[in-house]
Amino acid sequence: MTMLDDELHAHFRELRDDDAMTAVSFDAVRAVAGGRAKRRRTSRGARSAWWLAAAVIVVVAGSAVALRAWRGRRAGGVAQIRLDVLNWRSPTDALLRQSRAATGVSQPILGSVLDGVTRQSDTGPLTIKGD
Amino acid sequence: MPVTLTVSYGEATAHTHPVRRERLDRAELERELERLHTESWGWALACVGRDRDVAQEVLQTMYERVLSGVAAYDGRSSFRTWAFGVIRLTALEELRRRRRYASRVDDDAVVLESSDPAPGPDLLAERAERAAALAAALARLSPRQREVLQLVFYHDMTIEDAAGVMRVSLGSARTHYERGKKALAALLMSAAGGIR
Image (spheres, rainbow over the protein chains, first blue to last red):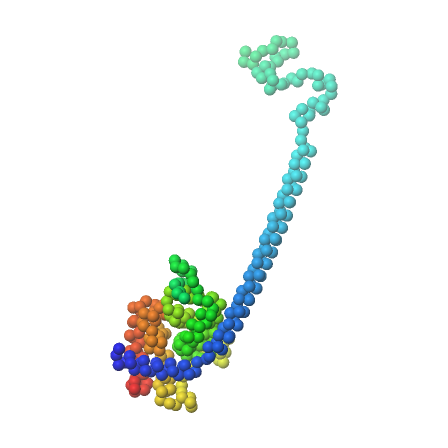
């Protein structure tokens, strides 16, 4: 340690002694700090409660909106099904609207049954298409 | 009770340490704070340009953080090194907060400069004058130089411990120490015609 170090130590020691004489008391500082720490804990608890309440409100509101939307979609789907049933027609529905006489006569074209067979005339024999 | 943990305050909070977590209880913390109180007061004064009101506010905030568990001592360094680090950070925050407030208010009455420890009627003794001259000379050094000199000469810390408090490398602390010591000696000599 140099002489300069010794001298600086001496100067700082004097400053330290002066500071010690004018220091605020530990009890005073601790009392204020303790009070603040207590308030901090209290406000932290209150803040947590507010956050919890806000979270619950958000969840409930979100659930309500989602439920409402789901119910709306469901009601629309049922209505569509009802409409489809009302509009449905049987494939043979046309037969019901023909007279009894017309119903007894065979239809001129039944392509799905007599595929490839055509009538040349009312009196001629049946021929195969392509002959 | 052995304490084997990390410092978890400020940016070090997220740091995880693989050792067993064991905290000082509140009574032990209070005992440690009381034991260090006078030194903490001196360090707080140094950190805020020797303004007593600000130093008191800093200590109150620091104690509050320690007692409420916001600043947790984990035993990675000595309690004093850790506590001084917390005081330093708290002082920096407090000074920043007051600067923001002063710039917002724009009122001459709220100017919060470092108090000038000019000797009053009760401080005419040579010893008090020297202490005041030292404080004034310290105020003219850079913050880092002031911090390392205060920690080494006022608090009798090693440069390594001072580096821990200042959160700088040992080499950097040593550089600040050497340069600060020369600058302080020159300032004291020019102010008082040499160190007596």
